[in-house]
Image (cartoon, rainbow over the protein chains, first blue to last red):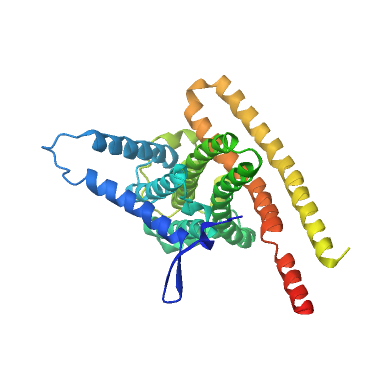
Length: 254
Length: 95
């Protein structure tokens, strides 16, 4: 049984096999870049928006709204990062409907690369917003005893991101392949439809989890707004991220 | 039973056992989470978008343990390292 597109070697260039994962990733990248370039080619105020541009604007506004609901403020760089993750995973999962195309996300190497980029992005965004010191302080957040657990959780969250996406997409492919031998023509189609739904949900979850990780690492700088009054969450946070935070044990005193 | 047959039997049995045990916990947890979310939506329909988004994310978190079990079962059946080692040993012994 074909387990992952890693094993399908399409072309060998000088002893270096070009497998289907890389080629399918290139196809997805080319589609995303090509459509975006085509739509935003003449993006000027005097040109009226056409259908494609309106569709793209709807997608971007949707991503922006979802991310603003999670992070409670509009951080554009988080939107670029998480939105790109969402669009890539969603498109590669949707291309499942094309016969012969195995989604690049059904290979563990692709999902591990995506999870690694999230793992790198969390400290990068956190340091960019609050400085190195406040990022390192998040590791001893409740107390120093939690230091090893915080480090472990940092890595286990990357592993779980990778394996969750891989397992979901791969399980859809495996179940369809098994059903194809047991009950062909009808049930595999149903399972592929379920696979489309699962693929969209997983793309959403991957992007939302990346946003949650990043925003929880960058929101550590305002503990007073988070812990004292929950209603302050809905307001625009006026606290500058550079502000020195009070020691956490002082907050327990009345 | 030969060694190969023992390895195959234990692998298949363990794969089924992994899935069956590994599905119990996440399914109970997902049921509880969904019930709690539905009760919360019934109490506060205004908060339905936030609740459903949180529900989706937490369901994915809960479900990932079942997915880990599925991946382990798939590895046991289709990419078993002990099976490959045993096949190699048999090939060395006979040829």
